[in-house]
Amino acid sequence: MRDDNKNLIVAIVLSMAVLLGWQYFFAAPEAERQRLAAQQQQSTQVNPNAPNPPASPSQAGGAAPTVPGTVPSTPVAPAVETREAALARSPRVTIDTPTIAGSINLRGGRIDDVSLKNYRETVNPRSANIVLLSPAGTQNPYYADFGWVGGENGALPTAETVWTADRTTLNASSPVTLTWDNGQGLIFRRTISVDDKSMFTVKNAVENRGSAATTLHPYGLVSRHGKPTTLGYYVLHEGLIGVLGDKGLQEYTYDAIAKEDPVPAGQNTVGEVWDSVNGGFVGITDKYWAAAVIPDQAQPYQGSFTMRQGPTGQIYQANMLGTAQTLQPGATTEVTQRLFAGAKEVATVDSYHEALGIKNFDLLIDWGWFYFITKPLFKVLDFFFRMFGNFGVAILIVTVLLKILFFPLANKSYASMAKMKAVQPEMTSIRERYADDKMKQQQALMELYRKEKINPVAGCWPVLIQIPVFFALYKVLFVTIEMRHAPFFGWIRDLAAPDPTSIFNLFGLLPYNPGAVPVLGPFLMLGVWPILMGITMWLQMKMNPEPPDPVQKQVFAWMPVIFTFMLGSFPAGLVSQQAFIMRKNGVKIELWDNLRKTFSRKTSPAKG
Image 1: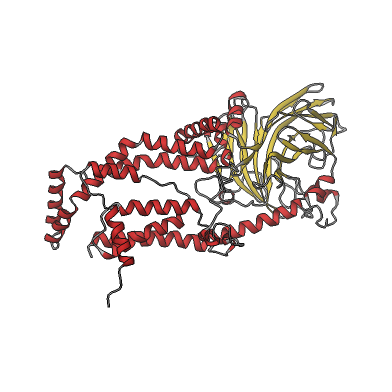
Image 2: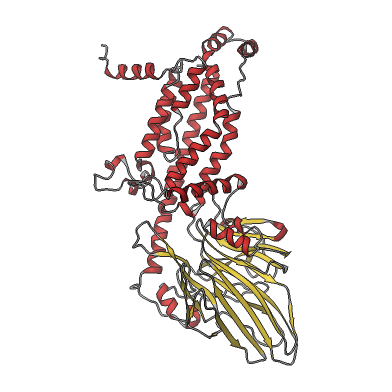
C-alpha cells in the first residue's frame, strides 16, 4: 500500500474515532444530564402543587446581590420554594405588555419576574411560556437590580427595603413610580417604564431634604444564581457579555469567569473589572434570551463581570457602577438606566441599537467573527421569509443563490479535480516506475502537471474560500431566534431542531422513541432528510472512478454511511453540477458503470 493511501486512511480513521468517541463519552451523557436538569428545574419552578418549605421573610428574599463597590455580607442559605410561593411572599406591581408578563418586587424594588408571552418551551402551543427572570427563593434566581451606594448621611435602599408604588400595574403606556423615605433626609424615587417590546427604562432620583451634602454612586446589575444549563457549542456564546466602551465586546463563559482573579473590595469574589468606560452594556445571555443593563451612554462608568459563592451555589453578575453624584441640601439628582429583558430578535435588538444609540448593542446576538457575512446573510434570509412566509423556503432559496454565486469557483475546483482524475493512470504509472526513488517520482509528477497544465492545489482554494460563507450560514441558522419553532412542511415543525423522524421506528409507525435510548439515542434519530443526504453523497461518489486500492475503496464505500449518522443535518447535493463539469473536461462519468458493478456483485451467484 502506498504511503499516501496509508496516510489518508489513518487520517479518516482517527477523525471518525475522535468524532464517535466525543459523541459517545461526552456529548450523549452531557445531553442526558442537561435534559434531566432542565426537567428538574422546570418542575421546581412551575409545579404549583409542590410542597412549600417554611421560610422567614428574610430567607425568602434570598441572598442579596453583590452591589458594585461594596463588600457582600455573609450569606445565609435561603429555603428553596416554588416560583408561585416566592412571588406571593412580597407585594408586587404587575407587568403587562404585548410581549411581557410578570411583576416588580416592591421588596427591594427588583425586576425579578419576567415571562415572554410570544415564546413557549416547545412547539406545543399549550406548553408553558418561557420564564426569563425569577425571584430570589426559587431554584435559580435571576433578576435585575438598580440603586445607589455610598452616602454619608443615612441609610440607602437594600434588598429588604419595601417601596411604595403609585399604581398596581405597569404597562407600555403607564409608568410606575416607587418611593422610599429613609427617615434621615433622603427621599428615593424610582420611576420604571417599559415599551411594547423588551426594554425597561429606570430613572433613579434622590432628593436631599437633610442639612448635609451626600455623595452617591448609581449602580445597575443583572444577577444569576446557580450555573444554568448550557448547550456548550463552540459556535455559540452563553454567559456574561458586554460592550465596554473602547474595550469592545467582552464575553466570558460561566466557567471562564470563575477562573479570574479576585476583584478589588470583593469577598470571595472573582471576576474582571473595566474602569472609566463610555457606552455599551453589560448583561447575561442565553442562546435566544438575554438580560442586560444599559448605562447612560454619555457618562463614564465602571463595568465588571463577577462570580462569588452564594448560599446555594455560584452567583454570576454583570455590573455597572456610575460616577459620583454629589447632592447638596435641598437638591435633587437623577440618573437614567435601561434594562433589556427578552428575546434576542434581530429587528428588535437593531432598533434599540439605532434609536437609543447603544454602542454595539447588536452584538448582543452572537454573530461571531464573520459578522460582516453572518448578519447580511440573515438579512437576505429574512427578506425571503417575509416574501414567502416560510423560513424553510427562504433557506433553500439562499442556498441556491450561494451556489450560483460560487459557481465560477466551484467550476474551477471541479475542473481541476476532473483533470487530476484524467491523468490518474499516468500518475499511477509514475509512482510504480519510481517506487524506490521518491525524488524522481516527484520530479516526474511535476513534469506531468506542467505538461497537462494542472495545478494540484487549484481544487482546494475555491473550496477554502467558500467555507467561511457556508459556516456563516450555518451559524445564522443556529443562533438566531427567528428560526426557533419555525415550521417547514409536513413533519418538520421546528427548523432549529433535527429531523424528528427515525428509520428505527419506521418513521413513527412503531410506538417507541429511539432518541430516548441511552448513549445511542442521537445516532438512532436518523430521519428522512439525513437519509436523503446520505443517498446523495453515495451517488456523488459513484460518479467517480473506484480507487484501485481495495482498503481505500472500502473506506470510501463506508464514508456516506458514517457521514449520514454524524452530519445528518448538513445540506448536500451537487450531483448535476459535478456531472456537467466532468463531462466538459473529457472525464468519463463512472456513475452507471459503478452502479452496474455494485448491483451485479450483489445479484451474481457465489462461486464455490
